[in-house]
Image 1 (cartoon, rainbow, N blue to C red):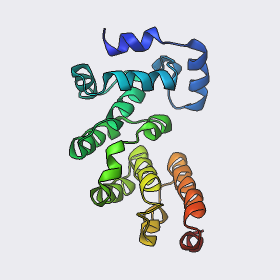
Image 2 (cartoon, rainbow, N blue to C red; image 1 turned 60 degrees about the horizontal axis):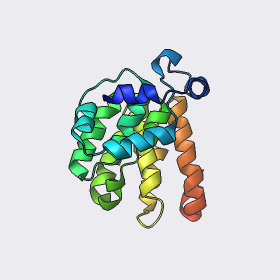
Image 3 (cartoon, rainbow, N blue to C red; image 1 turned 135 degrees about the vertical axis):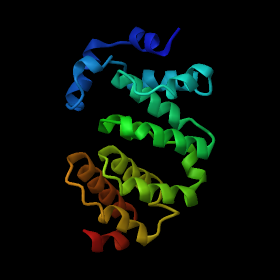
Image 4 (cartoon, one colour; image 1 turned 30 degrees about the horizontal axis):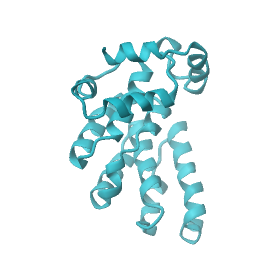
Length: 188
């Protein structure tokens, strides 16, 4: 069975209505209405399969839910270089905060030195969700043991007059205050 068919079998019209209100820049017609836990289950079942490989190499997708699944499948890739390649290929197609924020590649935890280079590049992007993703990865991976005060400059230098980027910068600094108060205070 094709992945899109599986998604449609899990369609929940009420959830579609709810989700469309949370992502107002995506038309309801581009949403199937699959609950996130169900999309996560599909990602777990299909990760590493030929179907998943074909799916993540076929862009763009037609539906929001397909993009959510795509982000989750990327998050399961175990090879760092392949994962970054797939992230970079997918980011131009990310068109909303939910798809952006669902991507959280597990392999990034083991490659901090290489990852910070990518984060700096993503955060400087003039593309909304690429910039947001970079700041999110900085927040997720560099506010604890690997923290350096110089990393605060990355979001501090973002000058993007776009709501979803501004919200991620605010979220970053709110989280940074809870984890690295003394270093963060001068930036607030």
